Length: 139
Image (cartoon, rainbow, N blue to C red; front, top):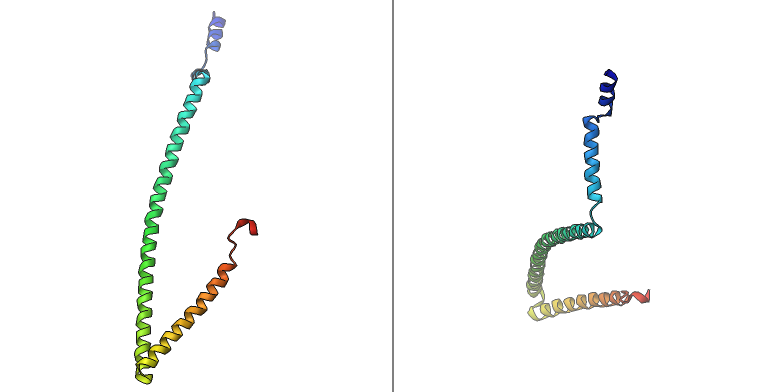
């Protein structure tokens, strides 16, 4: 009789073994899903992932656009201040030269110098622009 009780106790699974058996049963039940259902689950997961990726890039673009707008505003203000500084410098030089050479000679000298500088800079820009590889096949 003692042997029958010992044999009965040995045949019963431990609580850990019974949990594993339940886990295997649930894992096998998910593997037992029809292929059509598994594919539809996969499509749903891919759709959710694509929507999340789109939202991520939408937010990233909006943040980048805000930063770009700030940079453009700062750049515009810097350009405006630079141009007004150049105008003030030109007027100051004109006033100084007018005192020594008269208004007509000072204006002519300043205008000629500005045109000469513009011509030199423009010719340098044109030379460098001609060297640019515009067509990828030319390389």
